[in-house]
Length: 221
Ligand SMILES: Cc1cc2nc3c(=O)[nH]c(=O)nc-3n(C[C@H](O)[C@H](O)[C@H](O)COP(=O)(O)OP(=O)(O)OC[C@H]3O[C@@H](n4cnc5c(N)ncnc54)[C@H](O)[C@@H]3O)c2cc1C
Image 1 (cartoon, rainbow, N blue to C red):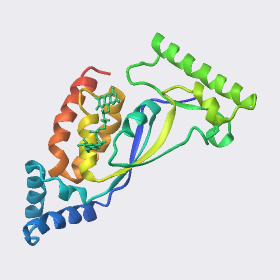
Image 2: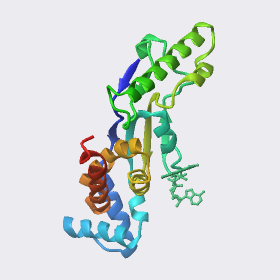
Image 3: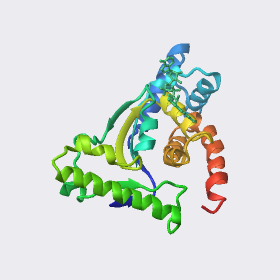
């Protein structure tokens, strides 16, 4: 059994210049104004966000690949204004060599290595893996055998959305009300988008980054 210490995310497609030009072009269309300087364009984008004039921000696209647990992916797919593709536990047979003949799981953040909780969690995952392989050996198909796999099973999921929807997703999923593993998973996306589109994401990033530092890093965890 392979254990990931935490989720991973990778920004697969993020045409920064094209996205910026496309959003600015559509924002300028509203006022029939012409592009002036980089600073003026930047100010325009910031104004749109501050005024709640969000539609120009929809003229953009960003695709992110997550390797996370199925509990987290289950929450992510609730966002309806995005496109998804996810590894299928119906069609993937983890007993095959291309999966290393093993299942992969993601360690929950609040279960610390070398603790009793870790031992309990790990044993449960190993038992689930054994039950899954035993069912396959008995001729049960992967789509049925998956019933014994844990929520922390690792999954790969691609999500494509425009920057307005990413803002919405990141706002909800980095907040203190969100699941701790979710907050840590999407924090990296917010950090990258804050660098690339500061007019839209910087304020949210500064607030959430401070909270995440307080809640996770400063506790020495
Ligand atoms: C902390 C937290 C706890 C949660 N707990 C639960 C839970 O216990 N059980 C549960 O079932 N879900 C739960 N959810 C999921 C939540 O209810 C939403 O389904 C999910 O967050 C998707 O968000 P959304 O609907 O705002 O946005 P998206 O689906 O991303 O849509 C973006 C926006 O588009 C608009 N929109 C989209 N579809 C419609 C529509 N049909 N009608 C009107 N406007 C629409 C809304 O303005 C919406 O905010 C939880 C979410 C969070 C963040």
